[in-house]
Image: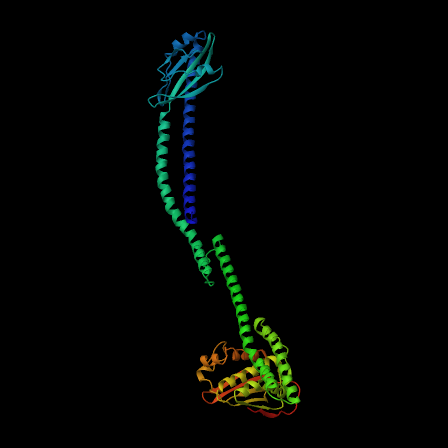
Length: 480
C-alpha cells in the first residue's frame, strides 16, 4: 500500500475510533448518571414510605405485620411523578398489603436483605417497560416486613438508544468530512515525497543535477535537505571520477602522441647506422642521440603522468642555456625533417631560460613536428632563441599552409584540428598544441601564434629568464 493511502486510512481510522470511543463513553456516562439519579430518587421514595410507616407505628406500637400492612393501605405519598405505589411483603415475598399496584414481583429481592440493608434490582417487562425495584426491611415484634416500591426508567433506555442513533449518523457525516480532510492532508504530506522520488528516479537515469525544494524545518524538509546534500556529493564524486578518467585518457593520448617524436629520432639514427657506411664520429653522434632520446622518452613518460594524471604543478625549473637546449632538440628532430625534405635552421643568442628541459623539449618538438606537417612540399623551418625584456623567447617559423584567422583561438584546444583529414593521415590527434599551452603555462610563460593562410606560421614561447650569463649564441642549419 502506498504511503498516501496509509496516511489517509490511518487518519480516518484513528479519528473514527477516537470519536466513537469518546462518544460511546460520553453517552454511557450520561446514562449511568441519569440511572444513579433515578436510584437515588427510588431510595428517597422508599425512605419517605418508611418514615410514614414509622409514624403509624408511633401511634400504635403494638401493630402486628398484618395489622400494619392493612393500615398501610391508607398511606399516600405523592411526588413530582405522581402517587407512589408500594407493597409490604413477608420473607417469602408474599404480598401482605400496600397502596396501589406494583407492576413487578419481588423476584427474590426480599429474601436477600437482612435487617438494616436495602437494595434494588432492574426488571424489564415484555412490553418494553423497565422498572427499578427497591426493597428495605422493617423489623416488627412478630417478624420482618419488606417495604417495596418501584420506579419506571424505560425512558432512559429509549433516550440512550436515540442518542446512539444520532451519534451514528453524526459519525457518518464526521467520517466523510475527516476523509475529505485526510485526502488533502495526505496529499500535502506525500507531495514532497513524490518530488523526492521523481528526483531520485532522474538521478538514477543519470541526471545528477537534480535537486528538490526545501520548505520548512520538519522531518520531510530535513529529508529533502539530506537528499540535496547526497545528490551534491554524488555529483561531485562522479565529476571527480570523470575528471580522473579524462586525465587518464588524456595521458594515454598525449603519451601516444609524444612518444612518436623520440621514436622517430631513434629509428632515424638507427636506420642511419644500419643502412649507410658511417664514420666513428657519426656512430658516436648517432648513438648519443639514440641514447639521449631513449632517456628523454623514459623521463617524459613519468613527467607526462605527473602533469596530466596527477596534475602536478611543482616541477623544478632551472636555468638552461637556449643554445645547447635548442640544438639538442634540433638534433633529435633532424631525421624526421630530413625525410620530409625540410631544412632546419637554428639561430640562438646569449640567453638562458628557466625550464624543465624534458617538458619544454616536448613543446619544441611538437612545434617543429607541426611545422613539418604543414609543409607538404618541403622548405625551411627556423628555430630561434633570443632574450627579451623580462625573459627570453623561443620561436618556430615555417613556410607551410598557415592557419585561418578564425581558427587561431581554437588550435590550442584539446583534440581540435584545423584540417582533420590531413591531420589524421599524418597521425595527428589534436593534442600537440593543447599540451604545449599547458606546459608553457606551468612554466609561467605564454604561447603566442601568428599565421596567415598560404604564408606560414610563427609560434613564440615566452619564458622566464635564467639567472646566469651564457656564451654567445651560434647560428647553424641542418641541411635537408
